[in-house]
Image (cartoon, rainbow, N blue to C red; front, side, top):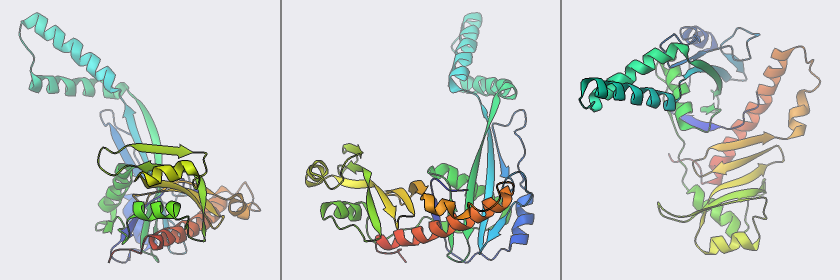
Length: 301
């Protein structure tokens, strides 16, 4: 239940769907396994795990959701090999060239033939809607995966207007200034990892790990004009993370003290433990996101 990566979206209008309404709406798209010729299937599963039944779990106005995504594994190399063999057979038997359109048709036939025999793999995507703070948090670093979850949600509940947050001050310039002037905000501490990039589309990239970020080595790169695009930080001794220029919160690691706050709950009651962990985690993530927005001059109106 402890999110490892967070991609945040801002709700542009208040979220007024009740938990009961959402439960009914998501039930229309409960997870179903891939059919024989279906490459990908995505649907909702119980938010607190398969031992429970509710698709939506609510704590303090925060709606927890879980999407299961199943895909058939059909390696592209297998398709290419089969296509090459098929094309060679046709060209030898008929004495003619197989052109692009026919190749695409043959490729589709091969995929349809192999899909029913392909293995499947499942992954789970968590998200929660903070109806009080008007945020949506998806546990994903990939924009494509996050958008997939949001699109499935839109199909179920209709209108769901969200946007990526925009800030007034450029994150790269701000993070670069933190290191250059050793002026990190008081509630944050530096980690030992960062990524520096030269300006321009083809600028070089330097990745540093396990080094003193205020040392001479980093100072040399900064003096040469490189800018900070990722920076390892810890916040209030409660969570460490890698903050990126796209405002995605990567590699979240919550402190042992925080994670032990629910240690007295019985291990047998898994649902109660997940509920308590979600309450703790979501409170920290929402507050951290609000703080990150403030670091860069607040959100653009």
